[in-house]
Structures are given as structure tokens and as C-alpha cells.
Image (cartoon, each protein chain N blue to C red):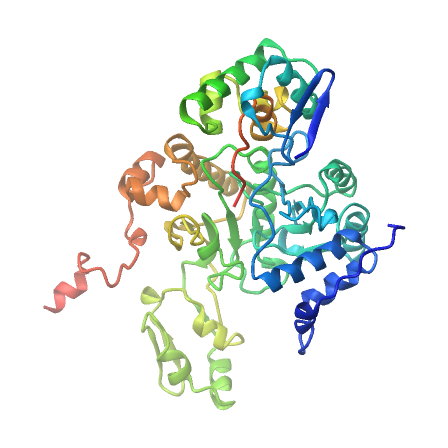
Length: 105
Length: 399
């Protein structure tokens, strides 16, 4: 698997750039991964989304449906895309260190 | 491209070039002459045929900034042996309504794809989109950039409104009962957000057919099927009917006997149709296109819920609005209002990967109609004429 490096961070990722070992996640890793998704700074709004995703993931073992993410964080889908330009699945989930959501059929 | 490309032996694929039809192998080989991705695709495919196993991994999340859909990530599970298809993502590009292109537009698209991808395409995928087959993650943004410069946009993928598509409608066909291309364009523009940014339980497809021949198969392949129809009488040119009979059409055998509504009579001179029993199947019109035509009071029926067999079984769409006129912006806005009303309870209550047809089955049509504010109507019954619980007045009178 490819190794992703950013400043002092060095982590293993899959071909889509998602963490291979999500347990290695920390806030510096989040910042590192954000740099690959067009996000240069993690604001409190970013953290609100990231923390919600992580809590949900810890509890249920999957990412929440997008409708639920919007409802629980109070952000519209547009605001989520403003925060994470590559979207909730590819952007936010990756930065939050979740396992890759399943693909599209 | 300057490096020497590996040459693959492809005895199994070569078999598929024999015979009198065009072969996808021939096209891949042509691209493989100069394109390393197409070349490795050839090698990988031969390997798959030999081992009788696919060498693509499931899924992958890639895309362009600002969009959550339009690109489907593909990776081979043999990246070391076939490095040029280690990434082989699919891009969906929104097709023009009715699939009309100038030769120049096609050249532009092909040139973009030769520069950034495998050079291989599907015209078109079953969603209706133009499909660009195979590129690397780092090529996605530059491809998208060039596409938008050329006036094209990505289509839908994932749990979003998929690129709406339609038959060629009034642009090419005399049966079109409404302007399918205009409505498709309108809906595509209106739902840009929903097409590009997935937020639903699962996909939602819209297809517009101009008449019940349903050339885009919307009854089987769209969650929301808009199918042209008429509510007055089939137009008959008796002179032409007699002409068909004279030229050898056995009207009783080929038309009367095959009419599902059993509503046509032919006495050798005059064709009579009992339009109240007509099921608008188009059969008689298709057999004698010069003699018969859909009525003049034209519009569309709206059907809901079809899907392919994935996850649950296959479902055909069934009627939700028996007839609607579609001749001005107001009527288009009514369609949008209906779609929004349908999406709302499904987005709110739908389970992950549950299509609207399955959702309606789960909650029950009665509850669903109540949620979207439509009154139940006899046309919504799936088999109105064979349902034992429906009694017709004239049936009772005969007793």
C-alpha cells in the first residue's frame, strides 16, 4: 500500500488515500489528510463534522447516511461541500479517518 | 508513451474478433497500439478470460472538487503486473438530450479522452451518459477542466439523481406525445445540485419516453418514468387501412387478435376501435403507421418505481399519474413539484440502498400516496382488468 507523507506524518493509505490503519488517526493526521482534499485549515465547523462522523463510526461501525450527517450537524449539504470540497464521502470521511465507504452500484 | 510497450499474446480475445460483427476486442487493440492503459487493459482482460475471474476491485472513491458524483473509481487487483490499469476510473459525462452531436463535438470529446484516458468510451452507458473508460486519479481534474471548457459536464453516479435521459422525441419521431428533449433538459438544469451531490438513500433515475413504445425503456429502468400518451381517440385513416389490407396485412390476425384490450374490429372495409378499452400499447399503430396515429390530445402518464434486480428483485414502474399535459413551463414545474414530494418521504424514511419502488412496497401505496398528497385512482391498480376486487357497472348490469 502507498505511504502518504506530510510534514512529520507518515501513514499507510489505500489507493483512494483513505487510512489503512484508522486506529492511527489523530488530529495532526486529520490535518495532513485534509491537505489532499483541498482543505488547508481545519476550523471549528470542520471539527464539528469530523467529530460527529467519528462518534457515529465508533458507535455503528459505518459512516452515517448523508441526510443524517446534515441533520445532526445542522449544516446543509452545500455547507458540507464548502467545508470539504470533495464532498462528505470522499472528503469528510477520509479526513475523519473512517474506513472507506462502499462504492456505487 | 515513448517507452516500449509490452506486447500481450491474446489467443482467447482473438477468438472474439472472428465473426461478422464489430468487436470490442478490435477497438481495445486499436487503442492499445499507442495507449499504455488500453494495452494493459488488453493484457488484463486476456488474463481474466484465461482464469475465468474478473480482476477489478469493487468500488473506489474518487471525484472532482465540488462534486460527489460523476466518477466511478476502478482499480485492478493486479497493479504490479498491469501498472497502467492500476487506476482505471470511469467518468460519466452528461449526454445532450436525445443524444444529438455534431461530428465536431464527438471529435472534441474523443481528443480530450485520448489526451487524458485510455481513449476507450461507451456511447452510451445504460444510464444514458457518455462513458469515458479508464483514467488515473490525477487526470480527473484536468479532464473535467477540458470538458467544461468544451461545454460538457459530468453526469450522476452514486446515490443521487442520475443523469436524466430521453428518447429522440419530437426531433425525430412522429409518435412523440410531448417534447421529451425539452423536459429532460429542464429537469437536468433544475436538478443540478441533486445530480452532482449525492444525498439520497440510493440512486434515483428519471427517463422520458415520447410514447408508449418507450424507446428508453423507462418503464423498466427509471424510478420516475414519464411516458407519452393521449387521452382522446386513435386517429384512423380508413383509406390507408384498406391500402394495408390490400398490400397483404392480415388485419384480423396481426392486429385485431393481438390487441390486448380486445377493442378493435375489422369487417374488411372499416376499422373500428373502442377507445374506452384501448390500453395504449401502440401495437396497431406500429403495424400500420401510415393508417393510425396517437390521438391529438397528447401528454404523458407518470409511473414510479422500476429498478433492475440488484439488492431486491426487479420491479416495473406503475402508474402514479394517469395523464398530464406537458406543454408549458407551468406543467414542467408541476412535474418538479411531484418529484420533490416523492423524494421527501423517501429521503427522510428510506433505508440505505432502498430504491423508491422498494420503499413504496414497504410502506404501502396508500401510506405513500397520503405522504405525497395524491388521491388514489383506479389507474394505479396494477392489473385493473383482472383484479377480482374491482366490479364494473356494466358487468353488474349484465347479470
